[in-house]
Length: 550
Image 1 (tube, one colour):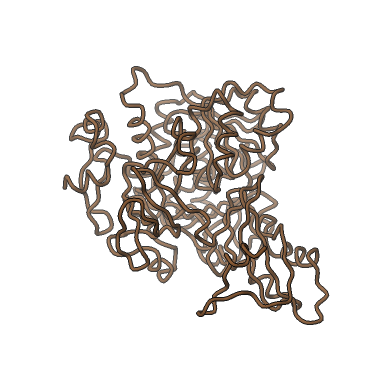
Image 2 (cartoon, helix red, strand yellow):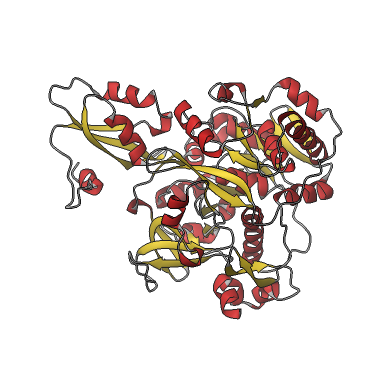
C-alpha cells in the first residue's frame, strides 16, 4: 500500500509537510481503495457527488456574489434557488430522470452555469456540447448521447431536433424569482457517469468522454492539494475569494473544471462576458470587476499582452493568469511574464486532456520562466509512465508515449467500447496520444509529435478536414497538418493534390470547408500541387515530409 501511495503522491512523500498532509487523519489523508476494479490511492475524506461542491459552497458563502454576467449578478444563495427552479422544470415538464442525458449548448453566460448545475440536480448526466459546432456535428452528438432534452440559446437550438428548452429572459425571470428547494433524487454512486465532454474522433465524428462524479470532484481535490503542497504550509487564515474572469467557452475542460468547479468551492466570483473574445472588453472587465484571476486559453493572453491599448487599463489587480489548451512557445511565456508583472508569480499552465481529467503536470511561478519548454512537475494524485510502442516503460530522459493512471481518468468513450479499448489498457492506464519525456520530475511534451492540431485551444483532427476536402470534385488527395501561428498557437495547413483539369482555387476550397466545418477548422494556409503526396511503405502520408519540404 505504501508503495502505491508513494508512487501516486511522489512530491508529498519527500517532505515532512507533505507526509503530514497525506497521513491518516491529516487534512488530505490518503488511503488505498478499489476504483473500477483497480487498487488506487485516493483521499479518504472527499465529496462523492458533484452537487456536493455547490451545496457546500452555498452553505459557506450564501451571500457572496457568485456570477456576474455584465449587469446581471447572482449570489450563491440566489443561484442555488435558480438551479432548484430549473431542475424542477426539467423533472416535471420534460421527464428527466436519474441517468438521463441533458444536452447543454449555449454561449457563455449565467444561464449556462445554472443549466449545468440544474441538470446535475435533476439527476442527469450533463452533455456539454461544443457551441462552435456545425449542424452535422450537432446531429452526430445528439445521435450519440440521445439526450432527454437540450438546454440552449436561440442560435444554437435552431440546429437541434427533439425536446428543447430555450434560455429566454422569461425563463431566467421565472427561475431567479422562485424560492425552490432542490428536488429529491437518488444519490448517485461515486463512479456513475456525471458529465460528457466531447472531442472529435479520427473520422471527424464527435466522441463523448464520460467522466464520473469521482473524476470531477477528484479534479478539484487534487488541484487544491497540489496548490497547498506548493505553498509548503497551511495558511494562517483563508485567502479572500478570488474574482475570476472566465474567457474560454464553458464547455471546455479548462473553463468548466478550472473555473466553474475550482473557484465555486472556495466562494469565488465568476465573471462572464458573453460574445466573441475582444481584447479591450477583456481588459475593461479586469479593471471594472477588480479581477484577481484571469482564466485564459489559446491566444487570448498573448493577444491582450501585445494589444496597443494595454497600458490604458489598470490590470494591476491580477495576481494570477492561467493559460492552457494550446502549445505555448518559450517566447510567449516570457512575453506573458513581462506583460503581467503583478501576476508573474501566478502565471500557470497545466497539461491534461479531456480523457485524462485531472491535471497531469503544471508549471507556474519561477518554474514558468526557468523551464520554458516544460509543462512542469507531475502533479500528485496521478501516475505517469513513458513507454515505447510495445508498452514497455522507458527510463527517465527517454522520449516515448505518455501514459497516465489515476482515479480521475475518463470512464470511457460513451457508447464506443472499441475506441475506449484503444486508449485504456490493463490497470486502467490511459494512452494520452502525446510523446514526451520526464527529466528531474519535469514532464516535457513534444506537442509536434502527434497529428492533433490546436487552434486557439480547439482540437482539430486532420482527418475531419481531409474528409471534407476529399468530398470536393476537384480534389484527388490531400493532407492536413498544423503549423505555428503567433496568434492562435497553431493553424491548419492543407496540402491538396488537384485532379487533372481542376479549376478550384484556395478561396473556393476554403468556402467548401467553411460550409460544413467551424471557422477554426478551415485551413488558413494552402499548398496546391499536382504531384502525389509522399507516403511511407504502409501507404500513410508523411506529414513531416510535407512540412519540411516547404
